Amino acid sequence: MHYRTLGRTGLQVSEIGYGAWGIGQSGWIGAQDQESLQALQRAIDLGVNFIDTALAYGEGHSERLVGQVLRTNPDKRIIVATKIPPKNGQWPAQAGVPVEEAFPGTYIQECTEQSLRNLGTQTIDIQQFHVWNDEWVGQGDWRETIQRLKEQGKIRFFGVSINDHQPDNALRLIETGLVDTVQVIYNIFEQSPEDTLFPACRHHNIGVIVRVPLDEGGLTGTVTPESRFDPQDFRSNYFRGNRKQEVYERVQNIVSDLEITVDELPEIALRYILSNPVVSTVIPGMRTMRNVERNTALGDGKGLSLEQVQKLKKHRWIRNFYT
Image (tube, rainbow, N blue to C red; front, side, top):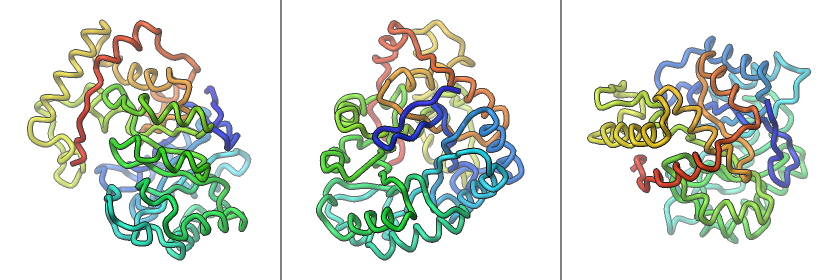
């Protein structure tokens, strides 16, 4: 496993991190705790030292599973990032809504304390806001609360998870110097972070955590027009209507363009992300041992060839399936 520096935090994080939404038993259907714990342990054994979770993932269930694994690996330095859900329940953050409705200071403190209990740790390496709106720069008391939590030793660094498909909606925050990391959707289809966000992160030495590297499964090559999802699984909405057909056709175009097999697509998708030096770590969801072993094998420091990267540029697809 190769490691990269997470921006100005100085933390050395595995190129492949562990996205722990799927094990929280919320949104994704089918996770079993025992299998999740085994997958987490296997990831750590294979060199993964970065886990991204959130208080909202199963109302703390994901955090508690992560906490179990931390306790069974006391000799290993595992870096944990978690997130505070917006108090007003708005996903994503909406324009014109004051920050006091989403992240008032007392609420930030309470959520952080709850996450510490769930994880069973004294300190959270990276505490993030689960949504963000750049209008909030200069509003409210969140800044003072984050600083106080740092001084108390309850968090080490602060980050935000940028709204889905709004990579420029954190540029003002980055300019202030108040944020240490950003988490953003970036993949073969969603290439827009390359335009403005990544240059800003490079300039200000901000750590970049990439989520949704496989487009919620779209870039695994397994989504076809015949695919069916449990009605309780969020993918049933994400891939609703004609979207499965659209994804399938675009995947076939990528496979044809790069002269690869569909089975090779997940590797190509992850290596495309890691070919960008601004990226610190990528956090695919890995609920099974098989996925852990396949994905962690790609954290070997190797990117794609320049020719492959250039071919993939034309597969940018501007759309938002979360709406």
